[in-house]
Length: 200
Image 1 (cartoon, rainbow, N blue to C red):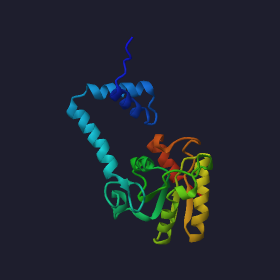
Image 2: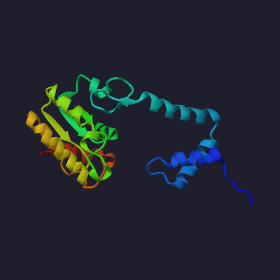
Image 3: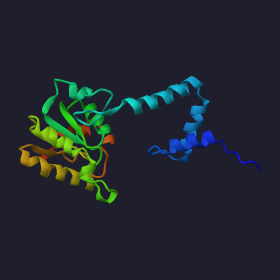
Image 4: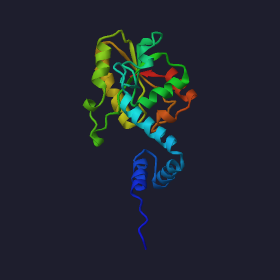
């Protein structure tokens, strides 16, 4: 019996499988869906991927994603620059922005301290945060890392660095379930967590 193996299709499935939360069957469905589209649609999809990867980089100020030098949030003169909400990942910014309750700025760490995974403070954007604290009128940083062991360790580490600089460090209240991800929290839960934050 002949081996039914189409190399470009196998490669496409393999690339989809690398995405988080995508298993073999879902990867196959996505690959077949792409192949069933008109060529111009598949080309637009590929072009969007390449453009996003080429044009999107870190904001010089908050380290979030942007296609400009400074992201729209950091460039917004109406934002309260005395408060910085520190998050682990760029997607966490969107979770807070959906609440329409937070008027400060953000700082993205791009991960949390996790010695078991080989992630140390030097692997994160902590130096950039400390530079912002020393060069500005920041009065408070809100530690909005996930309520996990790694998230708590990261919050404590940054708190120890920031407090001697005279900056108030608060932690989100536990409206966010322990072990949960900010990405999946609804607007009401995030609003309550912001309102009930505590100093650490």
